[in-house]
Image 1 (tube, rainbow, N blue to C red):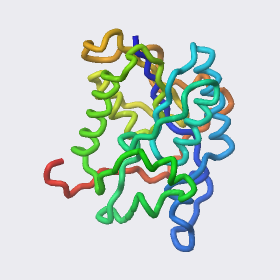
Image 2 (image 1 turned 90 degrees about the horizontal axis):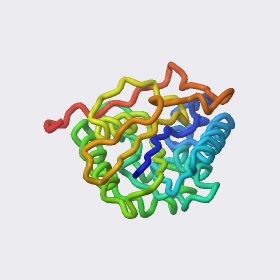
Image 3 (image 1 turned 90 degrees about the vertical axis):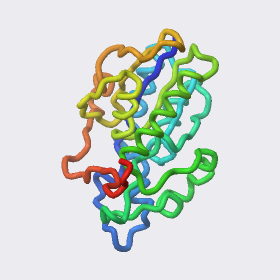
Length: 228
């Protein structure tokens, strides 16, 4: 049986810092580190997974908040987190007034960790998001050995898309930082994963259950892709 834990990254510094666009290095806003509460959330999540049987592998988005979260999850014996661009944040475009260059807007100190993550598409649409989450889900089924306990650390939009691909159901869930959704697949030939427990559970976080500020900008897909 394969067990998948879908986990959002911990609370990042950028949600509280309100850094100005002018005069601020892009990676401080677009690829921030975890805040102190974010590290507490990740530590609580790691303890919860350890108490629930542990994990064998961690797969992560290449963004720093996800990598720092993944590192804490893997600290109790799992292999070093594997980085995959298909789990990365939706890439915005100049059309939306928010230019984003993956090479220049991400923390340079973490570039080596991202080197083997693959190549992102830019700009993105609902079509490209569907494609990358679909291929990632297909690879999960084909993963060897099949009987693994895997933690996947990503971003809210991508996690909701993965949940849709894996269960065949679209869920309107507020996915708090470090909230967990656990799914199982009994056999590789099964069509969908089954939910175990609550969607985006936060009980394990206790006092560290701090949510995303309501004034954060919502990420959107690229609106001019004719194939979207």
